[in-house]
Image (cartoon, rainbow, N blue to C red; front, top):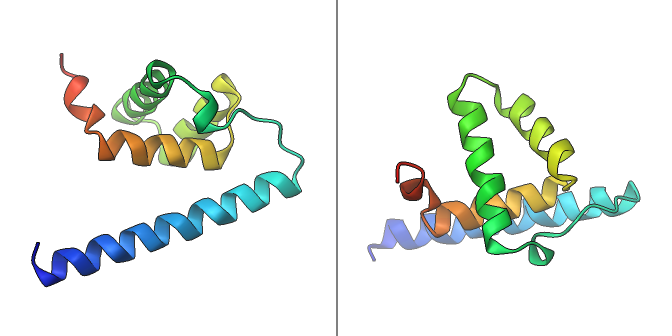
Length: 98
């Protein structure tokens, strides 16, 4: 990896960690009882990921689609963020066309 790529990966990981930590803190403060990403099967996480992408491709805004997904699947913002990061990391987007 080139130096810039390493720096970008480090910064992206740090931002993700901070964002996830803040979401978990907010969810805990709100007394959230949503399912955690680790409690969901990979099949269910892929379903959630795919549904979110379809909503956004269909014209829903980021906020609207995330709200619909969180309510439909009873998951927290932190869980959704974790699923999205896993989906991008594992390239689930390539599976959408199959």
